[in-house]
Image 1 (cartoon, rainbow, N blue to C red):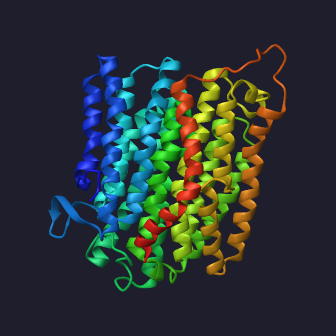
Image 2 (tube, rainbow, N blue to C red; image 1 turned 180 degrees about the vertical axis):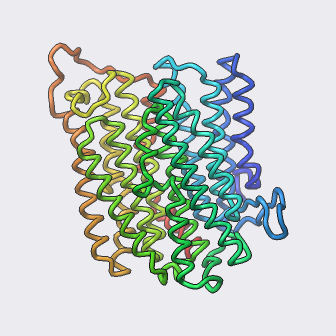
Length: 487
C-alpha cells in the first residue's frame, strides 16, 4: 500500500496544462498568478511519484486518448526510462519555480503570466514525451515543446532575443520535420507500427542497410540532442533570461532530446539490432567529436552562460555516445547521466543567474573574489561543477563510470580515451570560476561582506546542489529502475 495517490499518465500530463491555463487567466492578479506558479508543480510531482510503484510492479497499461488510424493513436504509458525523465523534470520544476519568480522580479521583467504559462506548457510537453507509448505521440509532444519554449527564449523582445529565438526554433523545426518525421513515416511503412517496445520494432522488419539510413535520420532529426552541426540553437538560446536557460539545459528541452535518442535506440532499434548497423559507428564518433569539440569551445568562453551552454552540448553527447555504444552498461549510464547532469547543470545555471542578479557580472574574468560576497552561491557552483565533471561525492561519478564501463565492454578504447580527455577539459573550464571566486581578492573599490542574491534564488540553488550529493547515495535506485527498461 502506498501513501502517494496514483494518477493515470494522462492525468499527470494534463496537470501542467491546467496550471498554464490558470496562470494565464490570473494575468491581471499577480498574487493569484504567483500562487498558481507555486502550487501547480506540487501535484505534478506527486502524480509522477505515484507512478513508481506501478512501474516497479510490472508496468502501467497503455492509455489511448485518440485513435487516428487502426493501431495508431495518441497513446500514453509509463516505461522505466520515461519515469526517470519525468522524475527529473517534476522534481526540478518545484525548485525552478521560486528561482524563476525571484529572478524575474529582481530583474524587473514584464509579461510574467505569459512567461510562466509557457513554462508550465513546456513541462507538460516534457511529461508527454516521457510517457509516450509510440513515436507519433512522442513527436507531437516533441514539437509542442519546441513551440512552447520559443516565447521563453525571445521573452525580452530585443533584436538579439528575436534573432536568438529564430535560430532556436528554426534549427529545431528543420531537423525534426526534415529528418525525424520522414524517419517516423518510413518506420510506420516498414514495421507496420510506431509502438515503442523493449527490444525494438525494426529488427527483422528492415534490412541493416535501411536501418543504417533510418538511424542517421533519427539521430540527426533529434535536434534537441545538439549533435554537431545542429547544435547552434543551444548557444543562441542563451539570450533568454537565466530561468529559461536552466529550463532548456537541465529540465526539459535538452533532456527531452537525449531521452528521445535513448528511447529510439532502445525501443525502436533495440540494442542488438543497433549494434549491426554500419552507421552506428559514424554517429558514435560524431557524438564523441561533439563531446570534445564543445568542451574545447567552452574552455575559451569568458561569458559564464556561454561557457555553460557549450558544456551542455558536450555533456549531451555523453548520453548519445551511451546509446550508440549499444551495451546495457552504456544505456543505463546514459539514463543515469540524464538524471545526474540535470541536477548538476541546473545548479550551475542557477548560480550564474544569482551572480548576475547580485553583481551584474556575467564573465568568468570578472569573478575575482565573488566567493567572499556570495559564499553559498559559489559553494553550490563548486558542488554542481563536481557533478558535471563526474567526481565524488556527487552522483555524476556513477553515470560517468557506467558510460566508461560500457565503452570498455564494447572494446571502444578511443571512446574511453575521449571520456578521460573530456573529464580533464571539464575540470579546465568549470573549476577556474571557483578558483577565481575564492582564491583571488575582490577588485579595489568593491564592498566586502556577504551580499547574496534574493533568497528565492539562493535557496533553490543550494537545494539542487544538495540534490547532487543525495544522488551519490541514491544511484543504486536509479540503476535498478533503469535496468528494468533495458533487460
